[in-house]
Length: 88
Image 1 (tube, rainbow, N blue to C red):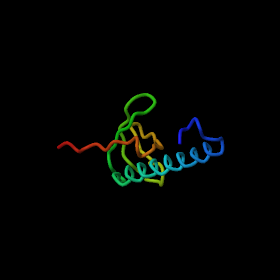
Image 2 (image 1 turned 120 degrees about the vertical axis):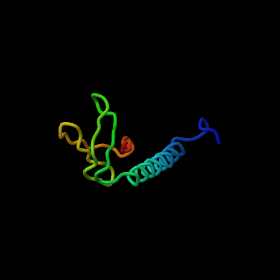
Image 3 (image 1 turned 180 degrees about the vertical axis):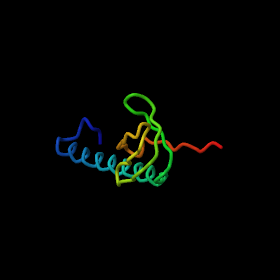
Image 4 (image 1 turned 30 degrees about the vertical axis):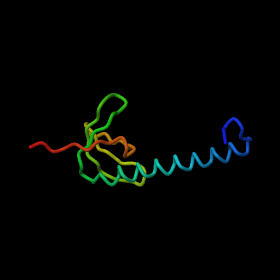
């Protein structure tokens, strides 16, 4: 069936299914990103004013608290964080 041939009710139902699937995929991405993080891990992310380096201090269900340079705390989506490798 073509979208152009669908009624408003059919389109609303399709929209609901699409939104549910998007939510499921975003939740999977968040869970995967969180599973890669640990408290004390060094991370980086793109802040409003450029790259931020910091340390993970707390991991919540949908966000991560990062202690950045200058002792500033950031609440960040886990998908935006990139772990830093220790170079020795």
